[in-house]
Image (cartoon, rainbow, N blue to C red; front, top):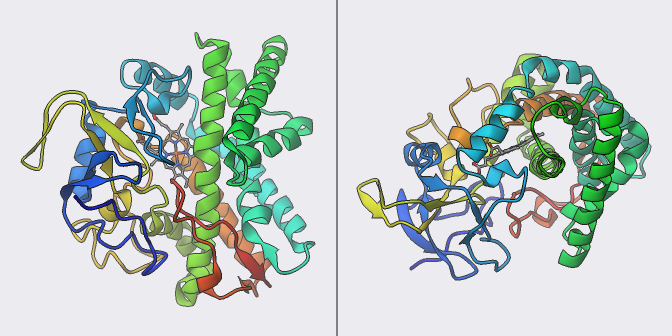
Length: 383
Ligand code: HEM
C-alpha cells in the first residue's frame, strides 16, 4: 500500500504529486494507520455530505492513532448529529450577515493599525508574524467580545498554542490558562453583558463549559487558517505579478481573487478525517464500518470536472463550487468572516506597500509540509 502523498516539493502551490492518481484508494498515514483517500470533487462532496461518516474522532497527526472519541464540550467540529445540530444551529443563528457587516469597519481598522505597525518595522520583516497572524487573532477577539485591555494576553496565549516551538506540555498548560481566563470572562459577562458572540450566547441553554469550548474552537479553527491564507496568498500573488496587477487595479478582481486563492491553495487538504458508522458504498467500493476516510480538498479543487484549466490561477474567474471550506453539515461556519478579512487585507497590503517583494529566493521560504494546515512558517519581505 502506498503512503499518503505529503510532499508539495515539485511546486509549493500545487497539491502533493500523486494525490489525485486514483479517485478512491487505500493509503498509509505516517503513523501507520490505513485510511481511504478520496480525491475527486463529486466523491469528496458525497462523503462530506453523508452523516453516516462520523466526525467523532481524534488523531491522525504527529503519530497519534485515529480513534473514535467522545467530543469535548462545545467542540462541535468533532460532533455528529444530534449534538452537532444543536450547537451548529445556535451558532449559525448568531453568525449572521448583520453581525459580519457590523464587524467590517472594525476589521478595516484592525488591518490599518496592523499595517501602521508593520511599516515601522525594520526590513526585512516577517509578514507572518507582523501581518498574517495578528489580524485574525484580533478579529476573533472582536467577534467573541474580548475586552481591548485583555487582548494582548489572549493573543499571546493563542500564539503559544499555535506555535511549533511550544512543547505539548506548554500547549496544554496554555490551553488550561486560556480556559480559566474564558471562564472568568464569561462570569463577568453574565454580570454585565456586552456586544460579542459570547455575550449573545449567554441567554441560550449552553453551559459554561460549552461556551468555553466554542470560544476555543473559534480561536483554533479561525486563526491559523486565515493567517495561512493571508501569508501564502500574498506569496502566490507575488509569484504571479500579472494576477497581482489585476488585484491592484480592480476592486472587483480583488474580491473574486479571494475564492480563487482559496480554491487554488486549499490550505486544508487531507487534514480532516471521518469514520464509517456502518458499511457504506462509495464509487462502487464497500467501505466497512469502522474504516477511516480522508478527503483531499486540494485534489477536489483541481478536478478538471469542476472547472476549466484547474491548475491555472485566474483571479477574475467566476466563483466555483470549491470545497476549500469543506462541504455538508460541517462546512466552515466562519467562511464569510474569513472572506471579509481577506477581501480587506490583501488590497490594503498591496496599496500600502506598492514595492512589496520577497526578501529571500522562493526556494528559501519555509513551507509547512509538516503541518495539518498548509502555509509558510515565515515570509521575509522588503518594500
Ligand atoms: C481561510 C480560512 C478558513 C478555512 C480555509 C477554513 C476551513 C474549514 C474547513 C475545511 C472546515 C470543515 C471541517 C470538517 O468538515 O470537519 C471548517 C469548519 C469550521 N470552521 Fe473554518 N476555515 C477558515 C476560517 C474560519 C474562521 C474565521 C472561523 C471562525 C471565526 C472558522 C470556524 C470554523 C468552525 C467553528 C468549523 C466547524 C463547523 C462545524 O463543525 O459545523 N473557520 N473550516
